[in-house]
Each structure stands twice: as C-alpha cells, then as structure tokens.
Image 1 (cartoon, rainbow over the protein chains, first blue to last red):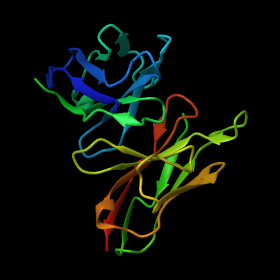
Image 2 (cartoon, each protein chain N blue to C red; image 1 turned 135 degrees about the vertical axis):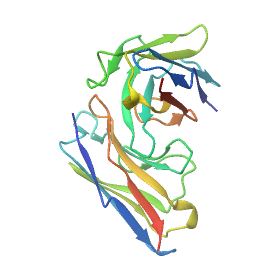
Image 3 (tube, rainbow over the protein chains, first blue to last red; image 1 turned 180 degrees about the vertical axis):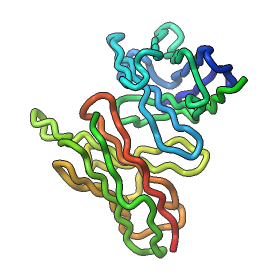
Amino acid sequence: QVQLQESGPRLVKPSETLSLTCTVSGGSISTYYWSWIRQPPGKGLEYIGSIYNNGATSYNPSLKSRVTISVDTSKNQFSLKLTSVTAADTAVYYCARRMLFDRWGQGTLVTVSS
Amino acid sequence: DIVLTQSPDSLAVPLGERATINCKSSQMVLDSSNNREYLTWYQQKPGQPPKLLIYWASTRESGVPDRFSGSGSGTDFTLTISSLQAEDVAVYYCQQYYGTPFTFGQGTKLEIK
C-alpha cells in the first residue's frame, strides 16, 4: 500500500521560501506522477503543480512564477518550493499521486507569519 | 482554466434518503480518443485529506461502498449517495484532470437533516 508523508517547516516568515518534501513509501516514485495541492483554512482545494515520471513539470499559472517541484528518485521523495510567501500562502499542503489523486498524504499546515 | 461549479453549496438530507450533488464544467472533459470523462469525486472529512470516491466520472474506487455512484457526461456530472449514512457527513469535491491546471469545484457540505 503506497503511503505519502509531507515534511518541512510549519512556520515560514513573509517573503521567505516555503520548502516541503513528500516521502513515498510502499512503491516507487519512478512510476506515475506526483502532485502538490493546498487548502487554506476553511476553504477549498487548489492545485499547485505536478512532476511527471520523465521529470517534466506542470504548474498552476496562478503560482507558476513562484513554484518549483523536483524529484529525488534515490530517496523516493519529491519536493515543493514556493518563494516570496505571504499570509495568503497559509494552508494545509498535501502531496498526492497521479492526476486523479488516488493517494494523499495526511497534509501539513504551513503558517506564514513573522 | 476549466471552471467547475458545484450545486448546492450545502445540503441536508435525512438518514437513509438519497443525496445528489451536481458539478457543472465550463467545458467538456471528454477525451474522444478513449471516450473517457476526466472527472473525479472526493469526500473530505474534518482534519483528513480528501478521499477518492469516483474516477472517470462513474468508476467507483476500490473499497468505496456501492451506495456512492457517479454519472454524467459532457459538462454535467452528478454524485449520488443512494441511502445516506451518518458516516457520509463530509464535504464533497469534484475535480477535472482533463486539462492543466487541474481544478476543483468549490465543495458541497453534506449534513444530516
């Protein structure tokens, strides 16, 4: 059974970079592709972007200038970097598998505050 | 971007009764090369990640009770819970994976009446 687990700082200062890692266990990250989704407190879901098994990436245009998603196959992990964060980036960040998101991490709340 | 609009925003249904949630897409999500509708439904309970219920608009994910069903085509899709159980109280989202950026509906909150 594939499992995903997000990790990274829970508190980020405004204008700094949010960095999260998703560790995949129970299956190879080299199969399928992998995505990041976020959910501001009390609000709906927003797609951030994906990385495909050939290394290609796709980002939400609303975030594209600030987002980088990368993969480390040796560690079975993929990562998210979001630069120049503001309070509007405060959210639960989820990693998920495939484009129909059949497996999700538990999510991690990242708060942007000084 | 493909915009998904769910209706209603919230819904209260008696236990054992049918619940119906609609999702309207701003454009078709059908891939004519494989005749598949690229639409999913998720259930999210408080403090939990979303759970995949339905994909390809009507295929039930393994382990999902058969009281959940998806239907629709073109730009109009429906999630139906045939006999509402207490554990079905949640927020439900539709999502399209036909085109990037993948997008979600705004969510429908389902409660017991």
